[in-house]
Each structure stands twice: as structure tokens, then as C-alpha cells.
Amino acid sequence: MTVSPQVVHVESPTERRNPNTTDIDRMSTADILAAINAEDQTVPEAVRRALPELVKAVDAATEALRGGHRVHYVGAGTSGRLAVLDAAELVPTYNVPDDWFVAHHAGGQQALRSAVENAEDDAEAGAAELRASVSPGDFVLGLTASGRTPFVIGALEGAKQSGATTALVSCNPEASVPDSVDVLITMDTGPEVIAGSTRMKAGTAQKLLLTAFSTATMIKLGRTYSNLMVSVRATNAKLRGRTVRILREATGLSDQDCNEALTRADGDLKVALVQLLADVDVTDAVAALEATGGHVRAALDAVRPTVP
View 1: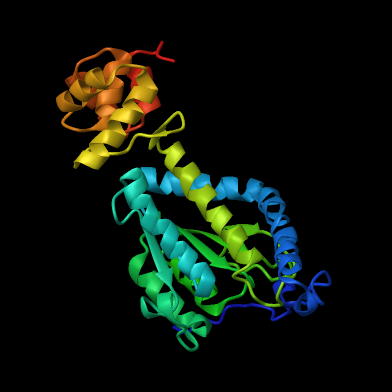
View 2: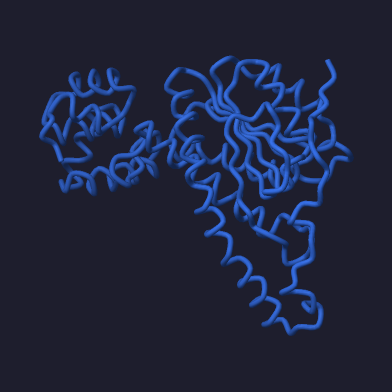
């Protein structure tokens, strides 16, 4: 089956010349950096305006993961590399299974280090890759500065055909919206400092959005307690020291008490935390966490509703 994304090829705002930087090659080093910084300061506002749609994406991803499904990122060039980075960092940060977040980059591993000719223009390759890896109930987030990268648009079409919920992150408010997109997240970052260099403002916006998206999803899934990372297992001395510090912050108890709780919990920080805060035994703490999908707040409410 040939994929033909219905995309209108209008010039993306990111390709236009920025009137604020037409003389940048005449500037001093200090003024060049000031001009870049001034443009960078517009990025968080562009991300803020996209938050209502990002809410839909976070909720869809959370629902997918709670249902035993996966989240897929799809991108090319800078967008793809940022997606790979975000997915990779979630495993050590939140102790999530390796296959919870899957990144698909046009051109594969080779394209992470160097450009692969025409990889981003191959819509059928994107569709084929996602059809082969997506299951019904998965959530797929495509990222493209132009809003029309064929590999990404094709991938979203293939994912939709396989029963996934789809979202597209775009920095082009003028791009057409493919029928295969359930949620459109547009961040209007405008012309780049250097025309078409979307690793700049567009890339920064995508990095901010990805970090917010994945962090919010982890919070919704109970991978934190308050603003502490608690989905950590003490498998070595370094991690044990970190878990003791987190446990001490959360409970206000001594290092000795926290170490003893971790020993009873076989190094599982969440179990130790619920056991200490709810004043229950380890068996009850484990049962509460299992019943609530590992969500510490929910486990605490289940065993002792008065815990703050």
C-alpha cells in the first residue's frame, strides 16, 4: 500500500527570514549572542499557548500506558534526535520498562549521528515502520518543525491504521492537518535566527514540550511522590545513597530509619515509603502498591487515608 500524505506544501514560518536578525553577520559576538537569546525568550510562550492540546496528549499517553500499551515517538533530524533522547532518559530517571516509550527516527541509528539522504522524505517507510510496531491502544506522538515531514506524516497514518491514538507536534500553524491526526499540537515559534535552522527555536520548543509531556505522564502514573523521584530501586551503593536521601526528604526520618526501611523493602523505595508513611508492614505496602499500579499517593490513600 502506497502512502500519499495529503500535505499542502506551503512555506513554513521557520523557513522565512527573521527581520530581527538580517544584519547578524555584521554584529559583534556579544550582539550575536544577545540576538539569539532574545529570540530564544519567545519560545516558552509558544509552548505555553500549546498547553491545552498537550493536556490531551498527556491524558491519552497515560491511558495507553495504564492499559498495558506503549507510547511511540516519531521524528526526523533534530526532532527525531530529541525524541530518542527523551525516551532514553525515562528509563533511568523513572525506572520504566524499556518498551514503554519507543522512539522511531527516520533513517534509523545511522541518522542519529549523520544525515541519511531522503530518509525524512520516505512516507511509506514511516508508515511501514509504525504498522509493524504499533498495536491497537498505543499512543503515537509525531514531531516535525514544518508540520509536513513525509516520514512522520506517513508514520502517523500507518499508526492510525493499526488502531493507535495519534498526535502531531508542529511549529507551522499554516500546515494542513492530516486526517490521521487525533490531536494537533502547534507551537508557533516563527522565523529562526538563521532561516530554516530548526535546531534552534523549533528544536528548543520541541525539547521543552517533550520534557513536559513525559514528566507529566510519569507524574500521572504515580512515578513520583510530591516532587520526588521514587521509582528507583537501590541496586548499587550510589543508588542506595540516593534512595536514602529521597526517603529522608519524604518522611523526615533519620538515615538509619530509612536504611532499615529499605532493607525491609528489599531496596524498593516505593514500598519503604508507603510502609513508613502509612505505618504498615511491608506486605501491606506491597499489596497496596500492586492494587494501585504502583501509584504511591493512591496506595497511601488505600491503606491510610489520613496520610498527608
